[in-house]
Image (tube, rainbow, N blue to C red; front, side, top):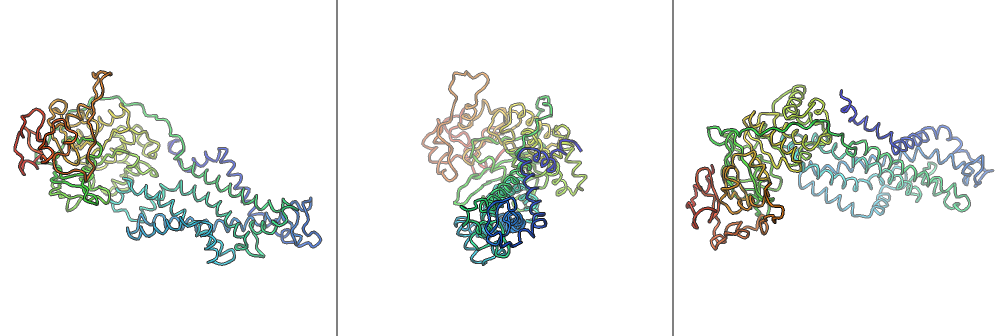
Length: 637
């Protein structure tokens, strides 16, 4: 086993953390408290119970370090002996609180929507109720005594623990890898155990251990008030109650049990901090050891195959509640082996269009289409594509489960879709990591995503798509947040994958230079519509739609004078639901005329392999070049 992989295990991270000053302090405190709890009643039990009427209420002395109580019993011995009962009851209450909080916290993510909302609302009401009053209410319900106090304190911890887990679970449940697991048919129990709980373990453990310190204080408080431990048993809270009236006569006797509560509570906080650090998420990442790969020139684009379109969509719409359409009836074809770019400003509907093809539009979005097919398969009847479609998302950290090793996540694809054994799937995962130019793939497969650089994570996501034999790769902003050199590597890799596998590519990007480098054809989207479809060779100098021209003009070049003010597009894109009659770009267009505000242009043929949705395209006569018809409006190249 490589040293780095061995070093990254929880056992070694915990060992490194314990060797830090905070770890040494926490370990020493835990050992000391454990020894006192185990050996205290054995060594000092008789002394703590011995009644001496000749030594009633004495002060500190060599015979009695903290003095004696009203029955002449040694107070120091009683404080030591009380450690075991205090810790046992505290931990029992913590188990109730943590267990109940986890159950209520993860429930909304796995039960039905109505029941989930009811649970969330109930937890919200309980959290809003003052904690101390809620604790006293529960103590009254369960009655006086140690058993009632355990349930009262434990249940009082459930609402805040449940609220924390609900918030953490909600953020994890929206991740891409959780959506993928649901598509794969992962059961609810396995979803919780494998994907939800491991990713909320660190903050949950930290909260639980620190809350245990609060439980200790709360339990001692109930005993101090006479609602907790009852005679002849005694804990630190009861000892504090017995000696408080003598605090001015013998302050050490009253302060000792209070100091024990405070110091033990601090110990629980230190343990939580050590466990949180041992989780590995806070540790600095190991420096990148992979040498920078030599940059190559992009290969020639693949030639479109005969036999019709691989992807065919007609009148594709994505609608959200209230009738707001983020995608408003687009039509597109992607040929086998073809590379198509989808460009436009943020909010234009690019990503949602791609997610609609993959049946990944988030709830409550609804997808509809007059026709939606993939390689002859009707996606409206059955949206499952298996490994024939690969998606490369914008944020690879949202696509990779941070709690699982990268190789394990890749292997799961082969096990589920290809029926491979665990060993075969692991071997293929290593092979795919090697195929995307990740050095030492065997070692890297045993690492977790946070140990990868940004470019390596993106390549790992591409490798995940290559675990099968994809016919279409959808890359949604795959080079965002990457530096120029790594960006070039990712683009070269996508081109190599296309050349070797023959897969088609749908590349979503804001960067026109990226699209021009990789793609053969460009679809320009604005306000949920495709406004132009043209060959990439025509993008820089032959675009006909004013919006496409404005996008190209807003990109500076190496020859742009540094003193020249950058071109901008005035105004802002319309929000979903804001679009009405007329051209959606009319409010920002320099060529706008009266007709643009009244009639909506349709996508119409403008020469071989080109369409444009504009009444007055650039480079044509004042009128519409080709009359729009229902047939031509739906046609694409």
